[in-house]
Length: 501
Image 1 (tube, helix red, strand yellow):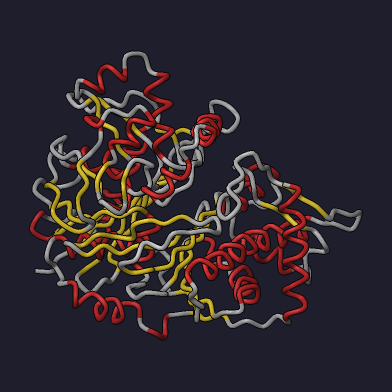
Image 2: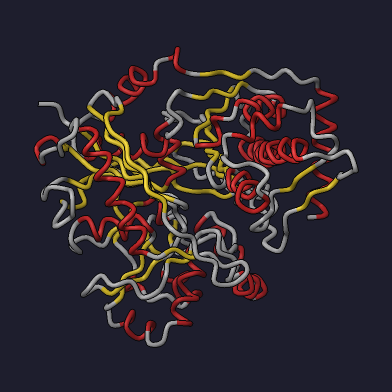
């Protein structure tokens, strides 16, 4: 009997479920979007129940497809792996599982003032040293502090142990196991501003700085082991092991088989996020990056340097939904190719502030260089170039922090399917861009971790399994073509625009 691994990829705008067999061949797929809520400028929220229903719908479609029109039996599903939008913050009742507020999404900027106050109190160095992170609204800790302050009675209930906090992975494991497991993994814990990535435990001092009761935090577990079994989940048999977790970007690093020191990947999703494997060494950043846990498997902890941009593919969505310049996201490449260049237009995609390496939450999107000759094609091309130029900033910072020179960059995510964007990126970076046939590396990484945790494969077997599944012939490679003088011109225009954003 074939055994299958189910990967849940819970993202910012929708939930994907993929079913893989033991050879990592994709056998079934499902996807469901859910509503985005914007209660105030700079605020972004999700309804936790809508997240859960989107996961159930995606699972039903994927499992039905893998079963060739009939659902798989429990004995056929070896494991479930989860990957998730990382810093999005939820609180729910321990007794009932009832959410007490909409989830506050990683893009949300409502805690910018709180971060500024923590900096003014001289706490930034302590947070950075212990967590590897910067004091920015991006991360979960200040979002949780906001909820504790603004929901009547929540703090007292949390102190009595009645309330659970979690990132999306924690919430999904809670629901999948019928409320029997309140856990997270080390990769997600390292995104909260509350977890000491050197001592590998929740920090009492940082919890005190943010006013977070320790009782509401989940247990931190490795990224690959059995956390519990499914119970009373619509469309899933009881008893399926939930056995792998990693935040979406760490899962993509794992799913791209970036197992060696110096291996790097960039995921082009709603935002664009670059990770560099630094092995057992937690490299501190002095160039605006963050230090994070890539994964923890058994006693092995792999660290990474990370640079995050808040807006990438979301900029294409803005052209579609906000301006109506395109009808579908796929149209942008053809439109951008209809002109030889951007006509001097530069777009800074700071619709939610600037992330690494700038960390300017007050920054706003900027379009500069407009003339009477500017067309929607020039704007489309400038949007793609702006996405790529953000990554060029990250690579420059990463080289300076790590002392490593990249030979290539592996890419994944929806926007990585855009050939024009990938070629411009290769030109800017001066390195090869390698794009596998399957660009959903986040879900692949979740499946690999889930199968590893459930014993489908041993750790030493994974590189060969991945290589057999990926196949070198399925990788599209983009080589640098642009002259250095032209690259420098793009970078000068970009840096000038960023200063004004």
